[in-house]
Length: 97
Image 1 (cartoon, one colour):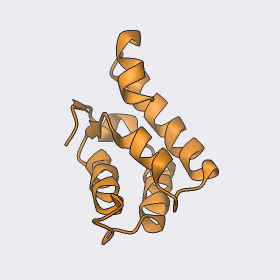
Image 2 (cartoon, helix red, strand yellow; image 1 turned 60 degrees about the vertical axis):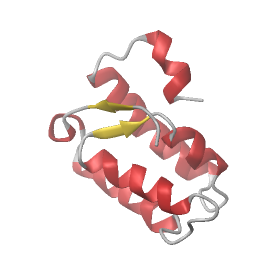
Image 3 (cartoon, one colour; image 1 turned 120 degrees about the vertical axis):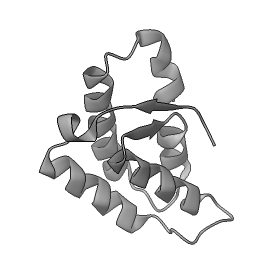
Image 4 (cartoon, helix red, strand yellow; image 1 turned 30 degrees about the vertical axis):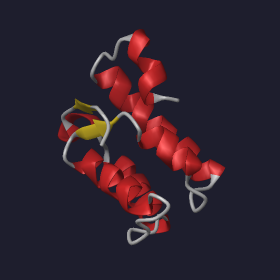
């Protein structure tokens, strides 16, 4: 598994953010162990526990079941987290690659 950042989901997420993440989770095959769907699903669920895994964005981008629109939605949520935790710009490449 990748590195992660901790954040307080209760401070960062609004109800809409929770719904958006759940929508994307519903599109990822949680039982796809061969192509990484199970890992991506686990990483998305991790957002609800305040864990943002560094590979999440890349793995979502490589997942064929996730549309460009869905990736853009998650991108907005992740940027919101990055701002809330005052993420250093040097880390952006790791988390947004």
